[in-house]
Image (cartoon, rainbow, N blue to C red; front, side, top):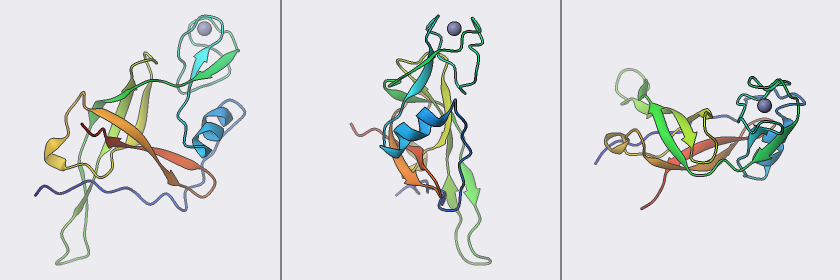
Length: 143
Ligand SMILES: [Zn+2]
């Protein structure tokens, strides 16, 4: 049986947000993933900021990004207790989305068999509590 990836402990993480990113974290608190799209030209702008990189407009609309898939990932060992405990494994992942071209969200793939992870795999968001927010993580989609 293949080892599975673990989830970092976000409990003490203080998420820093500002007026521009607040809608992302508000939606996350309701376990909903949204991404910012320019209200003038339609370019997705992630990370969000005050000006669209394409047209410099400030208006933003927040939309569901569609199905997520793995753009890239790596597998990192987390050392176990010396000298006997086996390492566990974290999988940082870049997720891209079917309906949000250009967006790549840095996250972590949890509970995934290490020998079954591949570029392009479909993933689904899950949520973990941080000190002041819910943090999106991803799982391999079932089926
Ligand atoms: Zn724009």
